[in-house]
Image 1 (cartoon, one colour):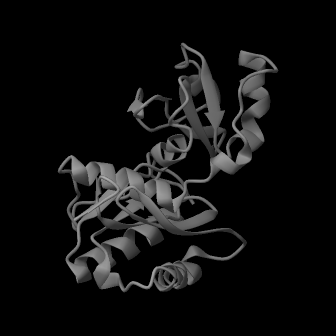
Image 2: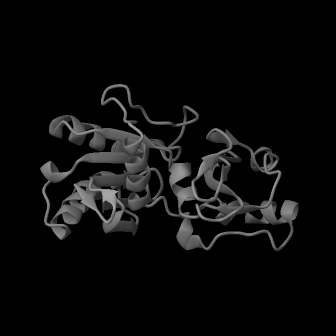
Length: 228
């Protein structure tokens, strides 16, 4: 089935790797709905109600989904475990494809059309950050692995004009400005969110390329072992 020249594929995207939980639904290249909240409440208690609400808004059931994509981290150990575990169970029960997506890639995807390098930064605590480097443009091109390093180590990988994004800037913006100047391009905080719709879109692109993950072998990408 084709919609607006694109393959119709209903994909649910979920991310719970940061305090901002997000569930999004797309149908091919068409945005359908999104539920995104930054509240002091455990993901475990709000994730399934958010999924149910999204499906109700779209007048769908879980069986109508073609696939699910989930943010596998890096980020909160507990949050990632909740999201990945929930989506693996859902896809296994429904016998639907599952796609794991880097949380850092999902954040960078919000700025994908810039012609600059994109450097998403999340606070990993212990004086370290989760970060990566991507090249924006017509497509998002990864320039580094997902890392857990001191902020100075991450910034040393920037060798071209770049834009910085992610909630790690709440703590590390002064370090970025010290190295790149007071006019260092810091993205508007609204782009810091790993959106469920972005997770779904990345998953859609991977499915079009024939890529998906296995229910049993898909694991969280904690980057380091002790994250809470």
